[in-house]
Length: 150
View 1 (cartoon, helix red, strand yellow):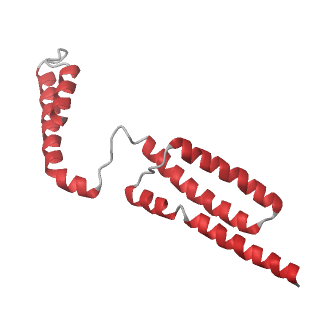
View 2 (spheres, rainbow, N blue to C red; view 1 turned 90 degrees about the vertical axis):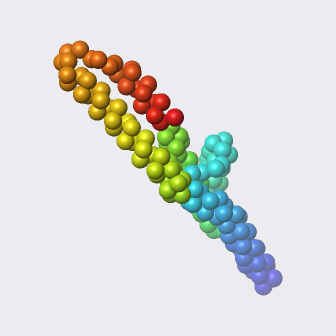
């Protein structure tokens, strides 16, 4: 009876530990979801993900359910964080604005958009007047647009 009791107690302790370890990453997931980008570094996130995969395989081989629960939950969390890390990695050239930033800058952005549209229109009209000869080169247009967007 004591042996069975100690096994059940250890299982309960294992589940409590698994739940606590799994919950540790929840604040980072919430932060990532709110900011729409992962703040963790690539080395940490990559090693964490690969480590979770290996430990999941190990836990399944042992049929240790508290560990399986913990590692499965952590795999989901790290996959979520990796998704946002990869998603924002490819969006660093043009930084997406938050709604508040956009709201503050919308008048400036609308003015810039109008200036760019005018520059393109002037360039197109200049090229229509003298067909075959570009009065303004594409490089000049690009320079003008970049000056507007500064």
